[in-house]
Image 1 (tube, rainbow over the protein chains, first blue to last red):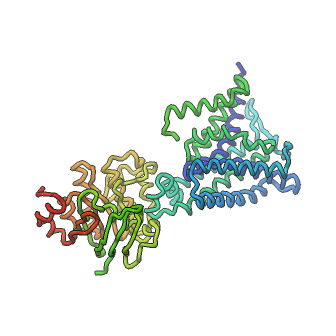
Image 2: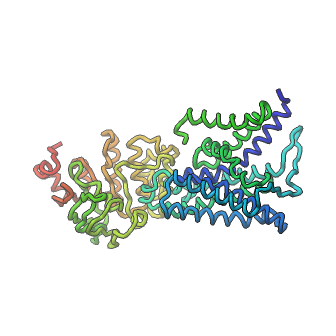
Image 3: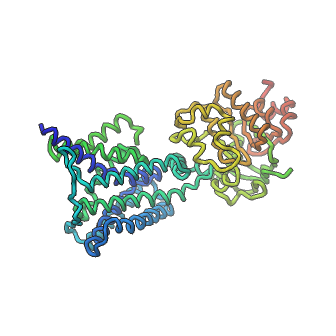
Amino acid sequence: MPSATLLGQALISGVLAGGMYGLLAMGLSLSWGLLRLVNLSHFALAFLSAYIVYELGTKYGVAPWWSAAMVVPVMFGVGAAQYWLFDRFHVNELASLLITFSFAVIVEAGIQIYWTADYRRFETHYSTLSFKVGPFFVPVLELVLCVVASVLAWGTWMWLRKTYVGKGLRAAAEDADIAAAYGVDHRKLAYLLSGIGAAYAGIAGTFIALIATLAPAQIWAWLGVVFAVVIIGRLGNPLGALLAGMLIGASESLAMAVLSPAWAPVVSFSVLIVILLWDPEWL
Amino acid sequence: MADLLAVTGLRAGYGRAVVLSDVTFRLEAGEAMAVLGRNGVGKTTLIDSIVGVTRRFDGSITLAGRELAPLSPEERAGLGLGWVPQERNIFRSLTVEENLTAVARPGAWTVDRIYGVFPRLKERRGNMGGALSGGEQQMLAIGRALATNPRLLLLDEPTEGLAPIIVEELLSALVRLLRAEGMAALIVEQHAHKILPITRRALILERGRIVHQGASAELLADASLLERFLGVTRR
């Protein structure tokens, strides 16, 4: 049995790593829950953003926050354009999965053509910075990521609950025809939401560039676990996505510390199965 | 008084099926009209056609002089149609208050004023729509329509499937809306004796056509007419 310090460190690292799951899950959850579009290209957009931040940073010395200020609005535009395509061709839930999967594969290929399949790492002087709280190390970048993800999750949650646009989106997600008959212009709202979801991929990508090692195939590395997080957090619920991300991050990290790294996915997907069997209404 | 709603020569239905033929009537501002008829004669189709969710083959529907035919349901709602669908279709995953505020438009009907008409909704403001009883859902459906600040309410069988005591509560709220507030309404109802006393005029549909139009009070007094078209005998 590992020491209490090791377990505590595993818990902290896990929760912080879970912030990334949550951040990636948020955009996917909004699109799936409120637009009924399962947007697999979300991962590709996040990695494309990461590569752009890497490129701007390593070639031109642009600070990642300035890169983010450019990439995030562009991603918003990409998200809105994707919705235009889905709406124009009346794409349903299943077809959206297949189309966005294809889109992700194309983006992956594009990344591979331009940046090759080599591993890339955006080294910054703060990438390994951490501070000590008692016996535990807290990595600064991961902490910043968690704070950003928390602010976004809470802000989005409030936006969906308190604003006319947010409530309209939730009403339309439940019954678009009825919402329309009460004057809710679902499509206008959907463009906005699709853009916001993709903008979140841009934000996640900025952190991926700083924290992770980049390779084209890494697009798929988080797919399974983030899917689980989206469902555990309930579709369309950004706060749920973040909390589920932290829960899964923590349980994976503890499983790795107590058992072995191979156990990490067993734990997260067992949690998913248990939750779905316990309450099938969840989805 | 100027016509608020004018339906002229309307032929409408779903897909290829024509349900309504040559339907023509007028409704003035502030007027309440009952739409009566047996099951399946096209009462709901009439409401749905005004809202814009059926297929129109011919004829015209104008609201305050504006032709509705080329407009989408959203645009029609924007012009002042407040629809209370037969299935109620409240948003189950939104709270009572969110159901009202999600569709609210500025105007005299604020959420507080709606709570004044339906105090039960205020008590349950934080509950999810899906957790309401049938009667409460109906009140919420009417409240939601009011929140859009409509010029005309379209009520489709508002008392259907409700317990008698709830029906009474709902009808007295409707009376207040129609008489005290002067809300114009088109009310589809199976039960003529419930709705005729609270409306000014009535029309009877049979097989998609209007077979009678007149004052509600006269129809209520004419047992043979009620018997002939609606199969109702005195209470």
